[in-house]
Length: 265
Image (tube, rainbow, N blue to C red; front, side):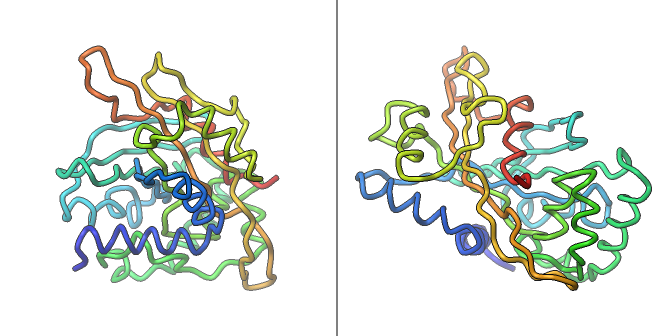
């Protein structure tokens, strides 16, 4: 069994290796004298009970994480849950799943064929959340899934790993606000997700978020080698609620647009 710190480090190392904009952005920020603090880690899965949210969350729960809140994204046909650790210094974990029944029988069968390839023993491992893609996949299947759901296609190609980490803007000392961080990143050549506006959310909903667009990486399919969007980096600024405590949850309307950071362009 991994410790929570070992699991989080595995997730980070896998994510940063796949997403080279991440170490570049961290370096840019640290060169200013700032320290990067992770607000939350996001994972994706399908709604099948063999690999759903509860299964993916199991190792985190056994290592001290507890359910904090649930979310629905009707437009994307997603549900999600976020978890918080008993140690508030550890990042929140946000796990979403694609509701397969909301799509065509064709998509449902394609996804089922992928999940049939997952060994039950893998889902019981403490590092299941960073096990990568456990199935064979053709580019034809990837493209067919993408025609109905970009999320379904991303999940098929990359499997179980961090979809994104998130910098807590509140912990930065050299940026006055999220917009100044966004401007800094754009000045250094990083493209941002502008769907729904560059900044999603507002102080009125106690959360502002922005994100990079996922860089493309080479992915080997059974029938082809293709460049497709991988992971992205998110930035979150949290605001105090009326009771004075910093808001720790998520805003579905904003997250709905953040999901599009991995869409094909």
